[in-house]
Image 1 (cartoon, rainbow, N blue to C red):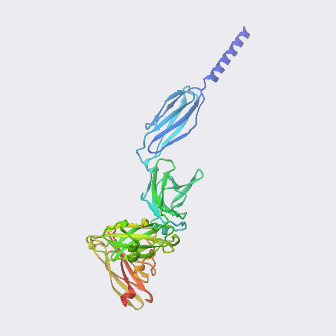
Image 2 (image 1 turned 180 degrees about the vertical axis):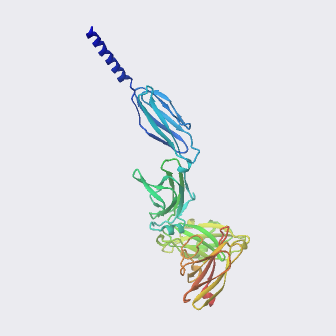
Image 3 (image 1 turned 120 degrees about the vertical axis):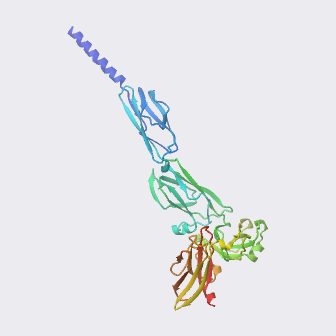
Length: 440
């Protein structure tokens, strides 16, 4: 009898042990964290189990395709768009129904502010045909070869191989790749000289690392004989314009025609007889500015044609002429202007007075060593557009009042006094006085 009781007891222990081994549910998940972009999206989690399981503590902004299941399975998570600037967090608790196991998955979604990236301009950036990658940031800003980027997250750049792009802000490394962080300026340069007939174009794309936001802007590198004008502005005695040129262009010639004229009516005779030449972009070192002395009447139409010329003094095809037209303003007095007067030289000091009109908010004035006013080029012309200039130790700037300026110097060379007024409408007129001519 005792032996029988012993056997029954051992059998009961075996039954109990067997039930414990079979009924304990194993449970695991592949992901411990799931992140959604601000605009929402879909993610999938994988569950491995040998029993029944269920999901609890589901955030209100998250939909799950199944709240319970049996054995291995996948659950699809769908997040709504986050309408708030701040990130939001939650969690999913996945547990076995017998209470034997539990897993927690952290759920997070970035706020709208943290995943946006914007560029200061989506307009096409145009570059000359020659390669040059050793510009300074100041030089690139002077000719507009940069784009401002606004972001407060990590982002990366996708650009064609013929460009070199640097970022002024912070960078870091993610998965062996350098990415940009936050806001700053992108400086753009061409690392290949391009000798194709027509311009080549591409899109520079900026994308947040999380993938929820993108920005882009187009770029263009000029064909070998092409010319492109930008930063145009009217001057008192004519017009001025910056140019970028193709790889074959050594200098440019421009022609100003009163009235509207189509490029199909232009001939080489027009250009050679009436055009004005300006040094161009040797080795890509600077962008030329052309200043033409052209008397323009108010409220009239004008057309400007500019063509490139190569080292052998051959003109580019007429199909590559850069053309633009404009209409002079109806009332010239509505734009800012200045007058330079009372110029005198006494006791080693050059003195002059600048008188602004009522539409001038402020003006800049400087001294320039030039052979003539017609030689105004990139190195000398306009502080307004940030172009570089050569002077005698700085420039003077005032508000909107008449003011006397003076500078100690030896007057043994040709000097130009240049004054540039600025107004609320961004209209600018340059006034220049050739000092040696003045005294003669």
